[in-house]
Image 1 (cartoon, helix red, strand yellow):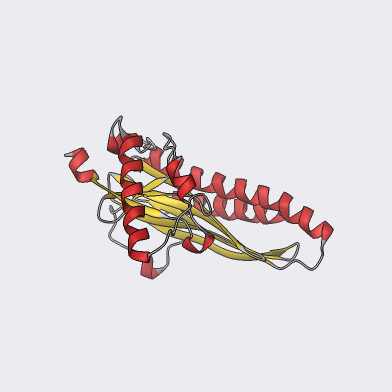
Image 2 (cartoon, one colour; image 1 turned 90 degrees about the vertical axis):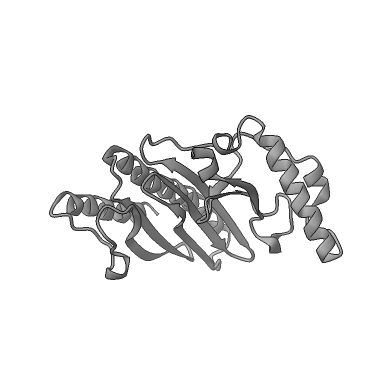
Length: 239
């Protein structure tokens, strides 16, 4: 895995040097848009094999942010997050491989962008592992491109964010359960659900706050990472 990280870091350094030259970057023609518009571009897409695992790593960076220091910090955050995940996977895969040389694992790392403007971006760094079963994890960030602040959910919902989120989640779950005719979620977990300041969320393309929960926390695995739209639009908050 160290070799994989070294290759990735070398690729990132080369990308940085290219950006510092005549404005060249690794975007494909399909990804090119007018200069001045914030965008995420794919700078590398590589597949590696290690300890019986196939690892696909897609790295995307943000471009055309007016505040270049913020742009640099976001791209460093993405790169560091990927490196941290790979380091953790190296340890886990090595341990599994030493016990059973016949493992077959698929791992993918990618980035999803949900909301992109010249003032704000909301995205997640996505990890998916498929072995006998699948494990999925997303790390969400909603960042002010002027200040670089990574907003917590309280920024959008105010000091009563915990009550607002739980009430809306319970309301939507009750409706889904009634439509299904039986409980879709772990109701014991829902009843004791607490919402912290680190609650995962993102802003969707319509400017709505969407809260998310880890796989298996409040529902069976077949429901994936449950999501609930909170009836607050960021345009109302910032206007």
